[in-house]
Length: 365
Image 1 (tube, rainbow, N blue to C red):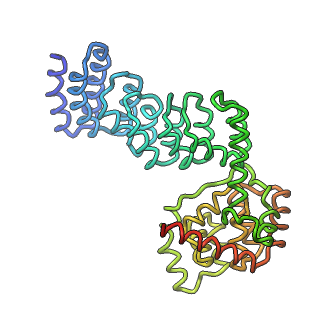
Image 2 (image 1 turned 120 degrees about the vertical axis):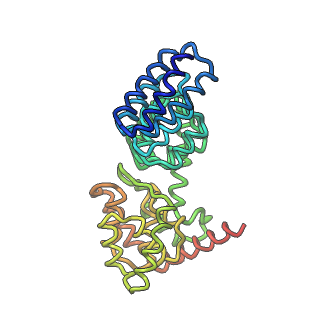
Image 3 (image 1 turned 90 degrees about the vertical axis):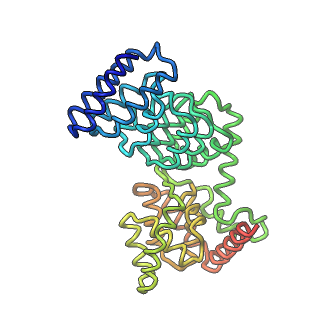
């Protein structure tokens, strides 16, 4: 360990100097020494390197941190604290190498990153080898379309029953994802068929859950569009994003601007969290229900909301356009319009009252 001891003073001097070039050079020499010696180092020796490298790594500029991440990503006994710090970096250029390849991140770290970070970090996680169920459970919920397709195609990733169910739910709106799932060797044809049928039933229930067939008007309204799945590109939205829009919608309501034209403007401006909070406020539905309505693979849940608050077809069409991520196909628009025309306002309002009552019961239990 004598070479390391001789570098410690260099590290102190480099930090004290305030010179980026000197810090980066010192880090390169220190990292190079570690990589060369790593096969002979035990964990206590690695901890010594970790202490010194992590301290210096906090003081260096962006490019040097990217280089450090690249050099440590494939080292089997890389310094844990340093690797973890790089993995949690806000810059994906720094985080990506260790997120994709380093074996020194434990499951707890990976789950925390999946829960907290943005889509670029989630995409890097999605290609890791041997992802556990705890990690993929988060990725399939929080990930966008690109992330979900990537993790579904990762043949070394493990999925829980719940995670697989979520994947199949999303595949109902994404034919390409369905094709990726069909290639997985760990899902038999029989199991895939059962998962698809379960997903169809969940989508069909939509907002109201099971009606038990007791309300013929509600059943007819559901059937008007129940079999039409959203086109490729269907979006998800987080409840937290809708909740965060509350102060802005409170202000709109106080100013008397909580009207259809203003909601349409929010949708056109791609402020979907605000638009959904506004729709929920007018429909007296909580953010959780609105998030489900927007994220559902079928258009029925949004149809009940829009029709129930007496908004017009143009507003519903706008929602479908943004939800699908592009101009919806004519077949979808025709089916949606037919559903809109067939669904009476009293029936839509009755459904929303049912949903609200069910939600209140669930929260009080």
